[in-house]
Image (cartoon, rainbow, N blue to C red; front, side, top):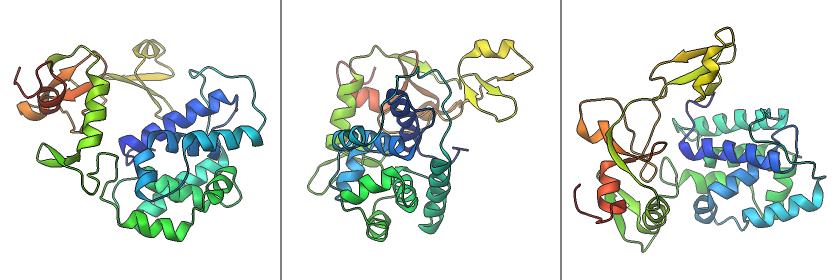
Length: 267
């Protein structure tokens, strides 16, 4: 279902799930999707001049809805019917713009198309207009993410691509607190739930062969946590080698230029 989603868009869904748990909701509602989007995509909101923050939206939501008992994030929470339509609208918006990916920007447009939902009401109070935002999003770099170089900002070049200096500094600072080891990349094994193909990294589930299927090297979507360079199993040292903390990966260029104890020095 999420094959065309950018990493940012997938993280929006992840944080929407988290917000639903915090509000004790049995469904991931449009308002939870909005909070996830605002939490993960502050730079996008800034780029389209939308005067709303995650904190302000959460306060507005807390005043409107009944807050239940928090639930565990390990509990499966389904999307509401409204949100299912939002995701369908997001795919349509990506097609309208001629984009091969589905990003947070398309999810935002999808929310605005679900008339009458709580997320649309909150966005409307902030002055969000579907047609206006369509125009602004059409002018953004493709695909949009917060690594964009803002006007007047010096770019940082990683793999020949210009990334925003403010983004690079923030992301590098976040990841310097981990211990990294240089490794050849090997695609992780995954477990697929029979029936709907839902993915899990909990390999213990594969013991129940009636419900789950183990797929060796099945996760081919690992990207550098700073520049989003895709790592793959290959003899090409640039794409096949990176640095891992046991869970996440950095490409060699980002680590050696930005995160190493001696940035810029090859290790």
